[in-house]
Amino acid sequence: MGSRWPKRPPVGDPSDPRGFEVLLARYVEWLAVHHYSDAMQVAAGRLVRTFAEWCAERGVVRPVDVTRGMVERYQRYVYHYRQETGKPLGFKTQQGRLTHVRGFFKYLTRERYVLYNPAAEIVLPRKPPRLPTESFTVSETEQILALPDVTTALGLRDRAILETLYSTGMRRIELVNLDLYDLDRERGWVTIRQGKGGRDRVVPIGATALSWVVKYLEAARGELVVAADEWAVFISNRGRRFNPGALTNLVSRLLDRAEVRKRYGSCHLFRHTCATLMLEGGADIRVIQEILGHASLETTEIYTKVSIHHLKKIHEATHPSGRRREAVGRELRIEFAEDDETDGPASRHVH
Image 1 (tube, rainbow, N blue to C red):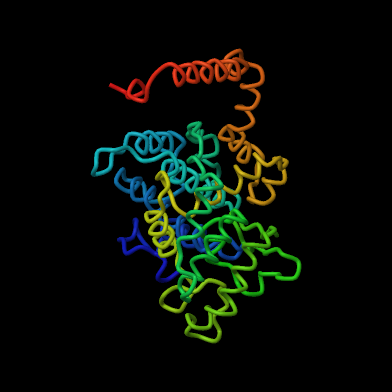
Image 2: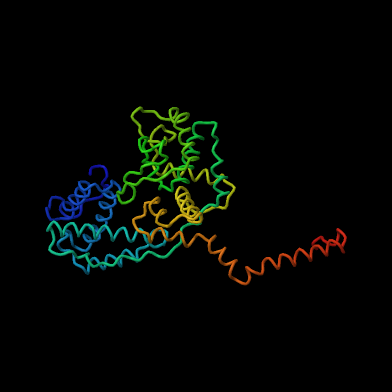
C-alpha cells in the first residue's frame, strides 16, 4: 500500500489485530490480490478510513463494535454534510462513501472478523434521473476535428486523439491506457483492457480515425516519445503516457477554440456524441451498449432520451402543426410574392 495511503493519523491502536487500522490494511490487500484496480484500492482505503475516523470520534475504534444504527447515522451525516462552499456532497460522492463502507463490512463478515454485517441492509441513495450532456452535431464535430495543426507532431497527435474518442466512444482513462499492441490495423479494431469494472472489450475504429492514428504513429509519435520501453499509443508533451488530467486539459483547450456552442465536459462529450449519432443512424441499442462497455442496458438507454431526431420526424408526421408546415410555407411564399409585385423596395424595410 505504501505511498497510496493518505498521511493521516491512525485510528485507535495501529497494532490492535481487531482494530480499524489492521483490518482496513488487510481489506485493501484483499482487493489487490483479487485484481481490483489501483483506483479502487485507493478509494477504499481513503473512504473507509473516513468512516473509521467518524467512528473514532464517537469512541468506536474496532469494526466489531460498529452497529447498524451507527451506519445509518453515518449515512445521515454524509447526507447533511456541507463543504466549505456550503454545498452538499454530490450524489456520486455520497454513494461512494457508503458503497465502500458496505464492501468493507462484507469482507469482514466473510472472513469472520465480525459476526454480522451492520451495513448489509443500508439503502444507497438513488441516482437522480439526469440526461447526459447534449452531444455535438456532425458539423460541430467536423469543426472540432479540424482544429489541430496537422503539419506538426503535436497537431497530428491531437487530431488522432480526437478521432479516436469520436470513433470508438472510449472513456478518457481507456484512451490513456491504450497500448500499441491493442491496436489492430488490419482488422480495424482496438482492444480496451481493464475498462470500467475491470472488463475487457474489443471495439471497432472507423477507417478515417484509424488512418489518422496510423499517420500519427508513423510520422509523429517517434518525435514525442522519450523511452524505448514506452508502450502507450498517445504520448504527452513530456514524452510519456498521458495522465487523465493532462488529457482533459488538452481536449478542453481544443474545445475552447472551437466555434461551437459550449457544453460541460471534454473527453466524455465525444463518448456521448458517438453513442447519440450511432443511435440516430439506426444502430441497435445493444450494439451501442457493447461498444461503450456498459454493464447494464439501462445505462445505455439514457441515450434514447437525448436522441431527438427520431421523435422530431414522428412529431412532424403525426402532429397537426407538423402537417400544417407545408401549407403555411406555401401561404407565406404567396404572401411575399404578392408583396414583391405590389410594393417598391422601400416598403420591404423593417421600421
